[in-house]
Length: 141
Image 1 (tube, helix red, strand yellow):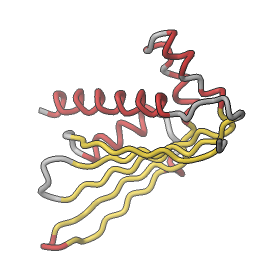
Image 2 (image 1 turned 120 degrees about the horizontal axis):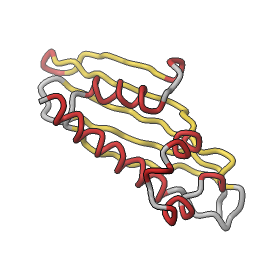
Image 3 (image 1 turned 30 degrees about the horizontal axis):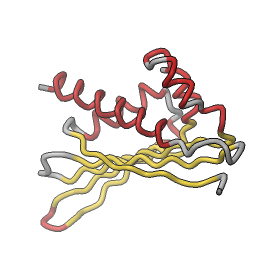
Image 4 (image 1 turned 60 degrees about the vertical axis):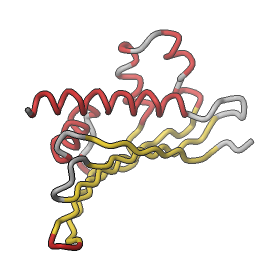
């Protein structure tokens, strides 16, 4: 069994991509060095904007909101079982689309082969981001 790897998942967001991205940065209290924004032209004179947060430390951020999840969940999703637990969030917005695409990738290295892959930690993050998106949609409208 391998000790390191990647997990990736994508989901759609309904709130404005820029607002969602800014809220992620504020919520995770990320340094600006980890943030990139790329704007490129795509077919039919539309613009594609990609927002990216690279290499944020999941274990630090996860521990900061452990109090919002049940103790059993916190125990089963212990980030201390990993030497490395880094995330990259990419949000892509194309003008005139009804919803945008977010991709969360987790790079990990376990301290032992007995540790499970961080799929449940990733699920918690995705659920958090979906709830944040719902809040932003309500707040924006």
